[in-house]
Image 1 (spheres, one colour):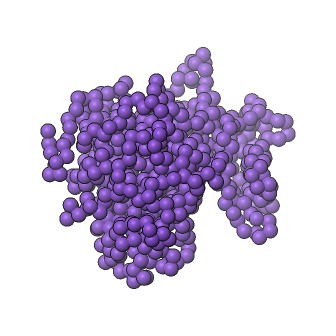
Image 2: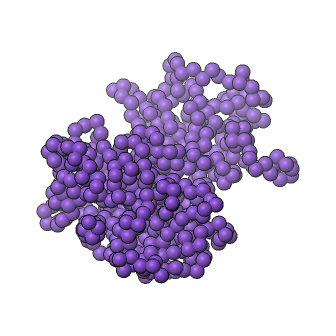
Image 3: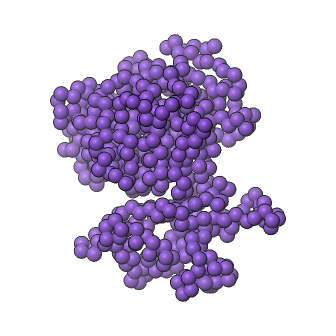
Length: 558
């Protein structure tokens, strides 16, 4: 048994159980009730799009640094299920997070405006980019420019399929189909025979002002389906590599004579030219019945949108089956889009639980002695490399930190001060990890196989795909000890391929100490995955502990 100087022991378990980096928490194996008596940290409908007014009534504890109890850990389960089910696209997820933050006293900032006169010590803020990435932060009441930042970086995008710019396809054999394209590793075999909905961001021109507005829409009843070929047809039904362009095209309806273009061939000559010009140009390039369905949905909410008002849209096709509890004692969560709405949810809730409902500057009776910036960054495009302006490899996080430092410094912010802030900071790159699969034990590295409902797993990789090293591991161990959390560890076998996270690109850009650590899940990159029912709350518990104890732990690492 190897020990660190901080007296936290590495427990070496049997081959089919995970390596553990700190002592066992008191977590029941089969909780008797989903909502036990005890403090409700968030409100059960915190992410419910059906009742936005109720979000403001949720109760958070007032700036306490105690660890979450078992009851409090359990209480995060149902709100997480709601968050997943009711926010099926990246745009809906970011909007839900923004709404949640505003209900807890956070102020929205615009990147296009100056922040110097807006950011104050003790304040809570957030900023969006593209409607698909969001950064939330709290400035400590005792913060001084050059002090560190406690950062949790996640990605809020998930594997999905996106509607093509001109998705209208010739009707085949009486079926209306929709042109879609895979985002990252989507459109794999798990997408066959699933009930799929459509939703996303719609750009609409206001007829009275001429200004372009962004609205969200979701058709969350089953609209599309990618049908499999019955095994009776022989070899084609067992093709391990179906063509995603021609054999994985969803059906969205039956032909209604005169409504859709009809063709019995795949020849391009039967299709439109794809030119974008003329009046009502966008709607004319889209399937008419899809346009009608979306305008009907939008009109049910604001009674003002017509097809000619739609300037463009970004739509996703998503699994409509709700997130739900499973298992004999409901110890599992079965859900879509877990990678990585899970760590995003846990990080945002941890930030809220670590700060008071009301800013210290607005209520002097609330004591908040933090002298650092607490930050959660939720980035888009991680699954495709993070290279876009809303991705983690952009300037979004570094520039946000620089602007905060400059605002508190009265506009006098030097490169030296920013570099000092980065050097004094620490980042958790929180992305889901692989839980051990009992049917494939041989593919896991011995002593590195995380389990569900145990806790966050530190992710190690000798080839730089993660940021984890001995110092950052010891740092997070101290945090785990202080908040009574258990850490697991994951590393891939030498004969397997490791995935990547936002950690290396962010820590290298800022020079900030960092670790990769996330909650484990089964069936990563499937249309539906599995985590433990306690895992959302266990993530909140550790991440809240990181925010609460960052300063005192950091003083141990000089």
